[in-house]
Image (cartoon, rainbow, N blue to C red; front, side):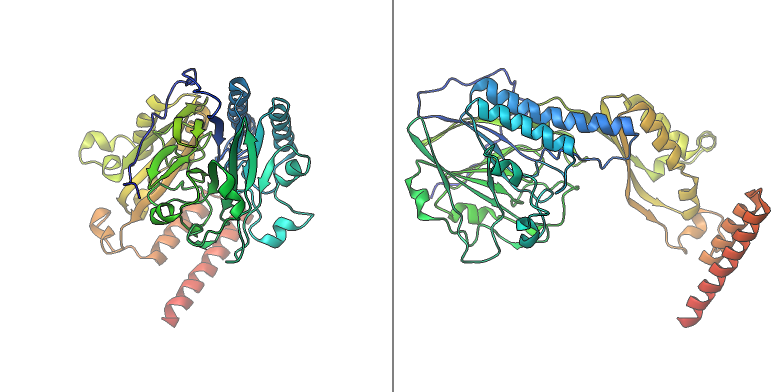
Length: 439
């Protein structure tokens, strides 16, 4: 067994740098994955959501246009083409048109279900009323779709054998479903027909040990271990999706190539360029593996610690914590950038209420493409620690509720609204007293 050797390729390689083909024994491939067509996780104005969806489609089209322009042999989509099992008609029609172009150019297309665009159970997958969206393309002959493998140890992967200018290529597909557990490669079984192939390929959509996981991915407890990749003796090449950053590594005798996403869907990999991969495969080894960047919005993360929002000194007291954040945010904003503000540190409840996060969101929505606020690293000081941080007096949750409710009642201009607030206040106080009495 060969020693493990990890190879990192330049994630921003120029798309115009095309390798020379060395004879007819090289099989050329465009690999793409995690296109997430229809993704709308960011809270945005409708016209920005529409632009976002157009950008997602354009990125996928860059991959298909490149494949046609280079006259590649195979176009492989390794999962999560769509962000949902029920994509809208615009995305369905768009993909149909791109696949038709590939077919007309004589390029064989293969696709694998992902975690997002595959029904979570086999019955839904096979049911006529709710099949995986790619199945309709497969029925029309636009691509070969690898359905998820049943969770049955006796189930074998069935390879597709294709002859590409005299070279037999065997392709299998293996994906995981949301909630699935275990190592899908551990008990891998493949039909013996794969042995005829000079170039055996596994198209994979699953987490791989050692690679970062996007925060937007659904719950998947399955994971492919590096050891199981080493032990498998069938596939010389694993072409994978699921992870949103491009990577290329050699594990044992296997070349593992992860396509990465074609657009950012969260802030988990701000330094990685979205794109697809142009690959040259041969029976005796990999000829090239070039990551081709696509047009994409840039990401920027702004980390703000609570100690910077409430510093000591009279000058600092003249500025609100909200204004401090806006001052740091303004230089970063432009319409081609998505920004995440990450708030970190400890603060009191009173300090938290001083933050006008809605004002910050509105500013971001007006001055950049998208803005997200991550407050998962914030923690409220325990009540006893908050004493010296604020007034030095004990401030119970009951007293805090009374103070806040009184402020709302005083601010209400309508008598009926004031009456409703008073009744709500009394009901909440009674409920709190009841809970306290039961402890």
